[in-house]
Length: 453
Ligand SMILES: *Cc1c(COP(=O)(O)O)cnc(C)c1O
Image 1 (cartoon, rainbow, N blue to C red):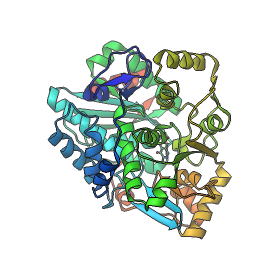
Image 2 (image 1 turned 90 degrees about the vertical axis):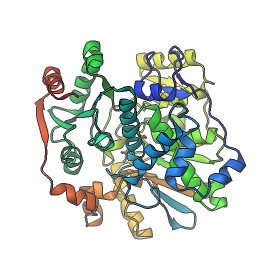
Image 3 (image 1 turned 45 degrees about the horizontal axis):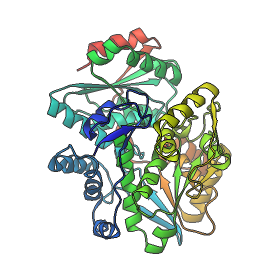
């Protein structure tokens, strides 16, 4: 299988190179050149597989340049770090309402599904090619810790994660700074998330530095992330009662559009998922798009669901590519218009498949209370956005993207108690190892130079 850029100006690559490259040289995002369909017979054959084996059967169609035995072994190791035997347990709250829990990985958020695997893919490539890799990224919370836990202690790799000092939650900071691994560097920047991101951008812009240190990005656009995320939709679909599977709307708490895109791609592979609801918080660019057809950036307003505080959904470009019938020139034109004007109006997209909802902080609090009173279910603030506007006439499967134990302050305020998780309790007893740096590119550059592998 080859992988092509959404902007149509970069040569196609094999799986391993597309994963290693991240962003395509023409500024586009990689996608498989075709989406091989699943036949009904194949789907029924897959129905009995456990999560890791299902993931292998799915990914082998794409990762054709990785030897099957190595791929299977990497996948098994990636999901062996999850604490629940089902990996992605499906919980039934009432007749037609299910929750797909995606937070049983090491950092208790759904990003572990992709980043555990990505870490193992990076390690495999380093070993295969005798190379080293230094991962550099900025985070406001979940992505950084999931990336760190994907690379924890892996030989040939180091990871540097910048975050704004004092502005992540104490638990998020502990997940980054209490790992005890010598290849992990948690860099607390005396500035904002935007400062941290600007520094990372500048360092990546320095060709000599980037190539010299074999810098690699950690972000939501890596091809392997989207593919890894397709698997839990398939897993859930195979496990739901037939009628529910056929009719259910998958409700996806969304920021970057990465999660919901994965489900939609699976639908394009012939798995009959009925539809998706794009569930946003008050940062509602995607809600506005799917209700009005207009894609327009707004200002980001911090919310109770911080991992969805996003106003440009980077993965959206992949959806756009399919929406304009895989016309790379058209994607370039639209992205250019969007960059120049901050808006774009679609004349058509897959309206039959998507609905959308938007949730203010007050509503998040109300829905956390509602879920607890009605079903005895403790939902985190991101998952709570999914409980807004549940379809009255068909089943829903709400994707639970984070554990409530990650947000003790909000839960305490709303429910009067703090949910806990053993892995977080363990972190509280470990020493914090972080490096406080001024918000200056040179300070970070010097640190990376001194600690790169
Ligand atoms: C990242 C994240 C999201 C948003 O995922 P996207 O792929 O950006 O749509 C939602 N919930 C949680 C807990 C997250 O960490």
